[in-house]
Length: 176
Image (cartoon, rainbow, N blue to C red):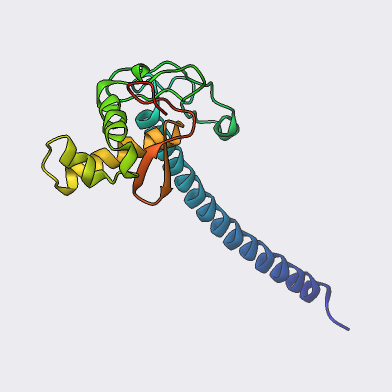
């Protein structure tokens, strides 16, 4: 028959092994938690940056600012409807005219109107119409603006990279 001291030593050894195993698991979970927390922080920063770039009120993201509380990250944001010059495009709705757009966006709408009967325009064609150097930086800037006009309902992109007025939108001069 085993001794009482021997049985106590076996139980103590088993308990120590279990404690060591749980500590290793806790360390692993703590490291995984730290990595997940870092990833969450990076996504929150990325979302704030995108909100700043896309915000119609020239970078004020007070309604969408991420906080330290993860539960706030999923909170709905307040809609913005006012357009600021040079960077903002209001969502198109019935009755809204092209004059609500900033000059840069009006120029894109005008280029589309001038070429309406010749089919959709590419950004390279727009750059040439505007007398710009047809270089990647200029073309990509126009593409960004055209994509924003598509996203807000002013233009349509039925074929990739080719832009035309969206259905129902009146370009400069009143024709749609």
